[in-house]
Amino acid sequence: MKPVHYDKCPLCLSEKTDSYLRVKDHFLSKEEFDIFRCDDCGFLFTQDHPGENAISDYYKSEEYLSHNDRTRSLSALLYRIVRSLMLNRKLGIVKRFSGLNSGTLLDIGSGSGHFVSFMKVKGWRVSGIEINMKAREESSQKFDIQIFDPAQISILASGSFDCITLWHSLEHFQDPFKYAGEIKRLLKPEGVCVLALPNSASCDAQYYREFWGAWDVPRHLWHFNPDTFRAFSEKSGFTLIDTLSLPLDVFYISTLSEKYRSSGLYFISGIIKGIWFSLLSAFKKERRSSMIYILGK
Ligand SMILES: [Zn+2]
Image 1 (cartoon, rainbow, N blue to C red):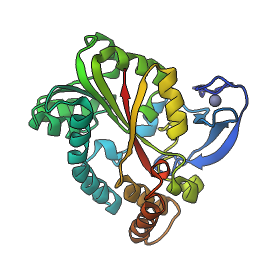
Image 2: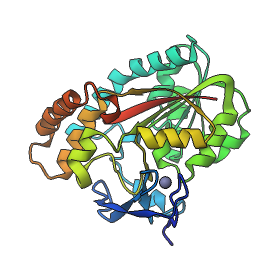
Image 3: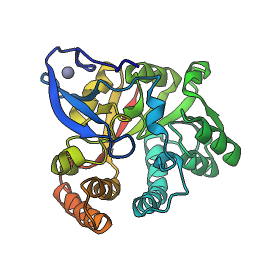
């Protein structure tokens, strides 16, 4: 299978792009991939990635955290604790920016369905989109929620959602611009889109370099920071309403990065580093590990 190569920056179409960092797929294949940087706009992207037809091989792991609840490693346990703490924060964000206590919500990249089922309990009319067939079937049965295949997005009615959420999923999409167009079509005129993304300009990304847990190549194709995300949202015709952060993500990412760096006590050192990065970025939101972007039409 031929890898997907970009001669131009996928964001600003400049031809001035160069290798920025060579990163190993620590999680699964142990293959190495190049992250390229655009000289003009600073956008970082995974060069020569496997492409739509071959990428599923890189998700074939029982440990893939977004889709699995059974692993007992410390980082998986930490991930689950952080996830439950975050559900209420996510609900608060959706309510605050949609201005609604309940409404229609579409979660793109719904994974094991924890967020959509939580929102359903809170009175929202929810549906999801998930690429992993097993996760899609299990979550729709378990929670009695309609979860669609990404290819079905075009059948959803225009202007039908008060809120569309993407918690760490846009960075996985082969064509984020096409998806942004669909999101815009599906939102009501006053609807909002809430996206969470790793921040490649964060303190932890700069400290860990090639061992940073959130590069996650070749599953992550686009490595946004607040500046390049602003450019992406403008190019896609959205208004960037606000930028927030997910403060607990840094502990998960630091623990994962310490593990990739082969630190024996990766759990402890990840927590300590997480506290350190939180202090460093306390007054610099744009340097935090994960960002939340709020988009309006
Ligand atoms: Zn560019």
